[in-house]
Image (tube, rainbow, N blue to C red; front, side, top):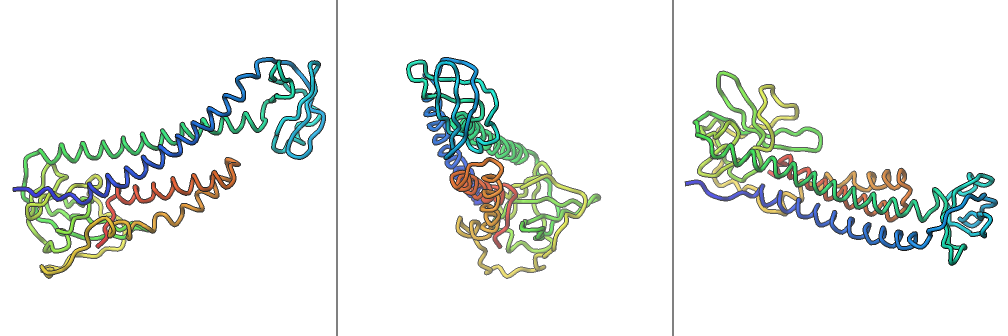
Length: 292
């Protein structure tokens, strides 16, 4: 009888939920900002051509036959002396915008934030759902007994468990971590379903990727021939978070780079840093990091 202990699935669901929560918050705040921008623009229904006559204190002064207005515009000195189409409120011509002005940029940026957050959420759900579907389908296939060795490989920041499968063609199968792997003898006979899902001592161990026929890269560590059955294997959410914390180290630098490119300043840096951090944890869970 198979046991239903799936710590990797719980960890994966936790990190996925964290990504979705952050995306929801970002999308909600961006949407509110977008609505504010649209509300400000809604009354600017009149159009005319005018000239940008000066720039000071973060705003340009524009003039057209119907009036004048000061329009917030970052680096507005580069448009001084140029003609521009002006959208303004016919009831209050001092409320106006021109192409590239701060209000238009921030409104477009807010809509982009909504789109980006939704895209990240949909991508995470799609790739996670696809992997879960393939694993469940493989688990229903007929089982064959194979001889395997559990190895750990460190490649860059990632440490993963692999099953080295003997046979006419030697294969390596990346698997999600389960404490049962720590005390698996090397070699050992296990059931393999669909060529991807292993059953070890009644515990189902799911794949964290496709099997390969070429030895994967990385520093290798083999399980002992006869592991101590009393070995205490790491388990639980804290063990996974501890080993995957390394993936959040680049997050502040990703945020800094994004804020520089997008020109969103501190708010953009915080937003991009938080998204990069939760995606780092999710990536560790998706790839099958090994906390042992």
